[in-house]
Length: 250
Length: 110
Image (cartoon, rainbow over all chains, first blue to last red; front, top):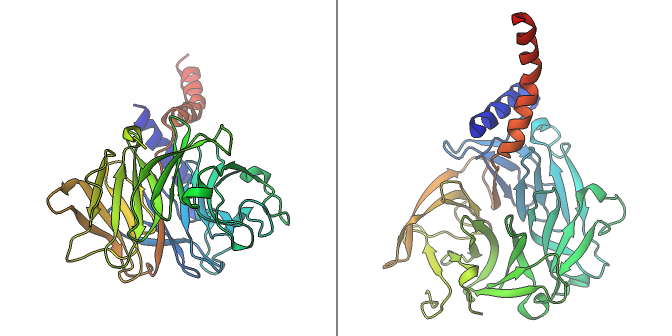
């Protein structure tokens, strides 16, 4: 019953604003692309593609996320923007996006991120793979989009974890277990860490997987049942690995 | 290629069809049906769906299908799934939207 009402709610909402632009409906896919290429809504059944945003950055769209309320978030390395698909205009492809976070290239923790995850409360967790002046060894930061202040990069994030990044390499991506409130990261070298975001940033990470070095591990996501899937970038043989962190003996 | 057989962690090692290997999996999304969607950049420029339930431990392969290819897809790097709405919140909103109608009906039947 609740599910039917949920769909009714969506239908009523969509009908109300159908004139305004593209609606990203539950189950739709959002695809981020290389620098300069469009951000797309893709129909999961037909494969139909629709532009919902632009990438005007110097970097690819490293990661994307969709909020339950409709906005799309996109990460361009040193910037995360909120995109409103329903007001996309092909003549002004960047006009429907507003920044919610910019990295501080001169800061002490996060100068560049390659992955992020959207928490249920509207905040974000970002995997920072590059520290100040291009140095490696940073970790995960917690971002509050509502506290974004233009002109003061890095002011709306706090460092959540760095304990393993120093030894295991910087995280390439981060996933959230919404039930347990835990974070999971994968480093480029394939080390999977479990992080308690409420713990001491210097001691709140535990290694729960080691995927091996075939190439560069780039992303991680949670499957039902507390399992994780991670993918790697490899032009000669791409892998997707499933990990059960609860069975880790590391 | 899979060297993890001696580990106690539970790993499933997926490879795309050997005749149609992926090239650059920079992201992954989990669909409600348990399928995985990955942006396959580089050589292919397409969005792939993987079916983990078809995993064959003899070959380490799973069934794959192209969700979308060509067109506006030039260099996919990341993918996300639009989530289902919070059912409880949706119910409250819907009931809130129906409340005025119920009030009108009550007045008309009074």
